Length: 379
Image (cartoon, one colour):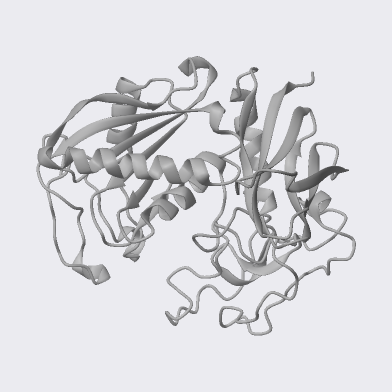
């Protein structure tokens, strides 16, 4: 229940992109891991890091990030799981005192923030964000001063969602507090002021909305409205995936608050970040990027015989010097397999969208890989 229920072992650098003073430093710690479970904990951390690196836009901002694993041993495994929220009643002795049922919601998993911050300060004083992985398979997480998530199925997605709160100041975009089927009557309509978070709003005015530069003139405003504010809106999206507008139902309320896209990782796990969230992440991490060249794979795909297809990738900072190349990943010697062309859209003053058209020149299917190289920033 306190720091007497375990000990701090030490710190390991997991991702090193340069001096701590120049990078965005993520610290990951564990709670409810016993001494003989530290190997499992190291694997849990690495699995999370692998997932994070694969998620857009962290994949293109990866060189801005350092990651440190702090090994912490607890006397017992797991986390407090109070019966008042339908839990098992378990009360293990853990270093950070992890507990479900914060605020009467079982999924709200928290730790002692003061203890977590103290440990991070002692081990990695230059930290920009702190995460704690809790050794429990009960679903849960929160994203306050310290991001916390459990090892429930889809654990890494929980962690990335909570990271959105802690590191980037995102609001929850889902339209309930206890749940759509909980029978709650207190979340029917949001009547408060304009939220401070960048990804929710009460403003449906095309000319003054906080993400207006991302909304096409052809997109209806509001883009969806909930016809029955006593429940979550059951309608499907009326617009293509990735359309930015104002969609009613967000900030824990059925009506009165709006989100930028129909679905985002801040509304439902395993979805891409919406364009608004993606932009905020890039803006925050951009100052930490090294000035040297960095490269990566932005997308992969397949083309049938003779097929042409066009892909797009958006929210690239306009001051980046980006070079694209597309290669076939299906070996076939003797003749060229693909032709590709890049077209550029200045989507806003700050951001570029790249449209990449690729044609299969052969009579057989071919797999492709689109690679980028950022040569630096134009000052």
